[in-house]
Amino acid sequence: MTSLQMNAELFRQLSIIAKDENLMAKLLKYAKKLTATKADLSQMSEEEFFARVDKAKEEIKRGEGIRFSDPVAMKEWLNSL
Image 1 (cartoon, rainbow, N blue to C red):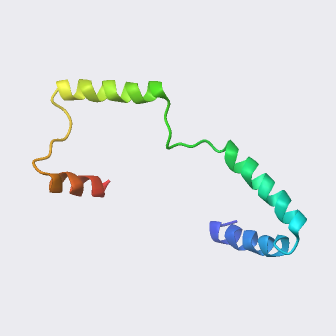
Image 2 (image 1 turned 45 degrees about the horizontal axis):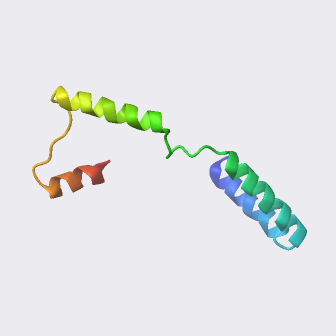
C-alpha cells in the first residue's frame, strides 16, 4: 500500500469515527499513546552533545572545518543544507 493509499484510507476511517464521540475519544487516547512512544530524533543526550563539541574542537585544531568571510556566505551555506 502506498503512502497516498494509506492517507486516503486513514481519512475514510476518520470520517466514520468523527461521527461517534466515543470512538473519537478512543482514537485520541490511542493516538497520544502511539506518538508518545515515537523517539524524538531531534533530541540528543548531554553525552552525545558534548561528544560532538569535543569532536568539533579537535577538527578545528587540525585546521578542518568551514570558515566564512561574511555573514551572507554563512547564510548561503546554511540554506544549502
